[in-house]
Image 1 (cartoon, protein in one colour):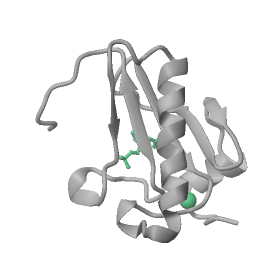
Image 2 (tube, rainbow, N blue to C red):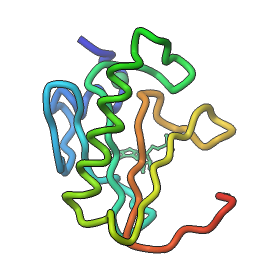
Image 3 (tube, rainbow, N blue to C red):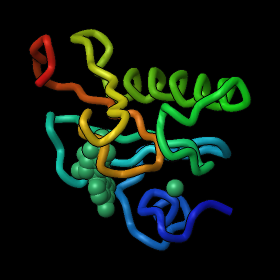
Length: 116
Ligand code: 5GP
Ligand code: ZN
């Protein structure tokens, strides 16, 4: 059923509103509340997995689905021709603040490398 203390589980459950751009039986995607680019979508599995560090072969198919859906969403949002960035902050030092695994889909501007 997920984790009732987890912000993103609460978005999955509809307890907290979010501007959803896509959902199906496996994933939910919604606009980031503090966008860092003209398009900034978060895509998450419905299932509570705290971070990439918790992903094992048992979750590999689900995580593959999340990534495939991210690519579809990027196409649907017309990000593909100019390019876009997918980011998975993992752990506090890397900037992870919500411990329900999420993939940032960022587009609509140029991105520097290396990231900050
Ligand atoms: P992280 O820093 O863990 O990689 O990313 C968490 C993201 O969740 C941040 O970009 C932050 O703006 C976003 N966020 C935090 N709280 C909410 C919320 O209540 N709703 C939405 N839509 N995004 C949120
Ligand atoms: Zn969760």
